[in-house]
Image (tube, rainbow, N blue to C red; front, side, top):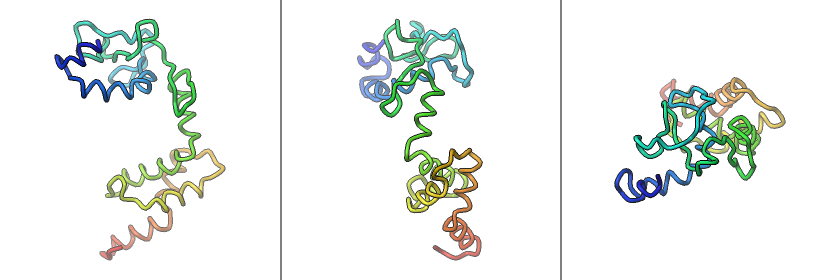
Length: 162
């Protein structure tokens, strides 16, 4: 339990203090095992023979008290949500979602580092998709075909520095 984790006997106070901050979001995943498969029978209870945070059968323990451990409800961006699907809907409606998704796509698809992309580019991608509910494919196409991305990649392929 928390006392053992904070005592230093296992992970120590610093690990516990950080992990405790994202417990509310972790609750959304309490019924998913370590391979990402849904398990209706998940209890969210701590396995007394396991490491702190470990439940049974490849599942993780909840940070909540026993009566609430199996609950999938949480908060996302100040909204009460019943489960992961509702949390994803709240997240996708946030004003920064499309811009942030475009940034992640560019970092993944191109030899770029997180934080190295000019926000004017990702804001431009988001602006071009405003008023739509873009699919992942829409996001990829919009990010990779943004004029500044295309001209920068083309210049790099020609050996020019930009």
